[in-house]
Length: 106
Ligand SMILES: [Cu+2]
Image 1: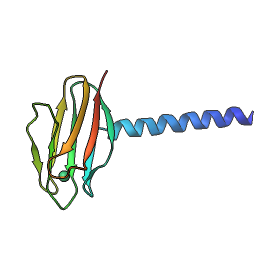
Image 2: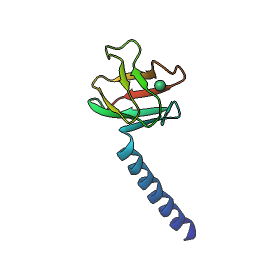
Image 3: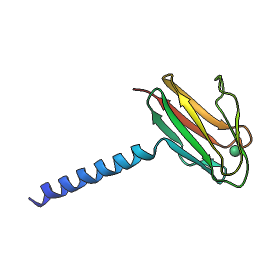
Image 4: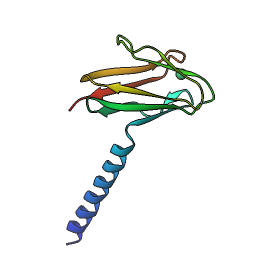
């Protein structure tokens, strides 16, 4: 009986944390010269907002894509839309160590 109860509670916790993640996944922060997540799943057509919470300028680009380099001063946000399925490496043109993988799939 105890085991069953534990299983139910654990299931509920996983569900809640999954929802919380999904709601905040469309926003990424730049802080301490790094993206706040290493990788992210998006659905085709979804937008991703990248906010610069550093005290230095960042300059986002995606190698081998048509996206122009988008510079962001401290406090500024940019919005990226991913309409095509695939893998995208988002990088910073100023800080070579900044990398984030975006996976766009249904
Ligand atoms: Cu940067």
